[in-house]
Length: 436
Image (cartoon, rainbow, N blue to C red):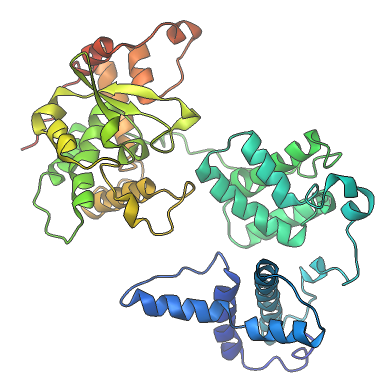
């Protein structure tokens, strides 16, 4: 395609239109699919685009008498889709008058080339030096959080398209890659703390585990500006807290599921009186609301979903929540999650749980209703407020940190237990938020 269009690339708009289809077929991360109106039609269209090169691939194999299994065929088709996308992007550059060589054109080996790994390390298996496999082993060994695996996994896959073998990554390439990312408009923080961090950590694990002798990313970085002095994320003021909590008590005029209505009604209140992360509350199950010695408790546990550092903990239920009927709501709910129906998951996974979407919707709803200060994250602001109110109310620091899932500020605070009676005693010190 590249050689045939070098002299006369053709109409730029036509190339751009076909490029969009190629990006969908290749699963390009820059394409966002919005399913609206008749989603079944969208799915059929997406399926056609993903398979637009299937017949050509099959014809190519048939002409050469080659047979591969179904799984391998799908991998070949995806590789072809990506290669055609790369070719089309080069043709578009020709149409724009840019005749420099394709910067990623050398990623394709000759057909008869053999990897060094297979020549010299056959006993180690074909995956031993694969960058994606090295990352997978690193992520599993370090018990990396699902959300991080989702972000870093995509980054590693992008690098692996150019360097499938971790041993071929060089410091010079890493510098050029960093510059390319910045030229694309990515922020220095994103490049340093996202892209470079993912590859650096993966390569460091590879070095430790004898895949490579040196870490090619070591010493390569981007200068990240410090947050301006005086800029700090903050918690809700009393006025803002009353406003947001007041929204939860207003009649719902939108067409929402019973789970979504319950999430709007209760999650802001529970976050306000527990200091927990919104994801931890959004994933609460009926069985996670317990009664111990007559004391209602929230059991925040990795069994329900993501919990930072995977440390379970109890939080006493504030009496104002009880007065409003929170325990009655829990008692009347079905077994399982309180705020979403797991049977209605649309491609949800450990890396992209339904509870995360619940939190995002609540945040957007609060923003839509007038909380626009960029220093205030609609969901996380409850954690800041909780800490502030605990200080004012002289809540025991150790108990406060335990309920929020924070690391004890010294070794002494790590001793002993936090029985239900102690949790209730401290949570009752927090003042009630009166709305209206």
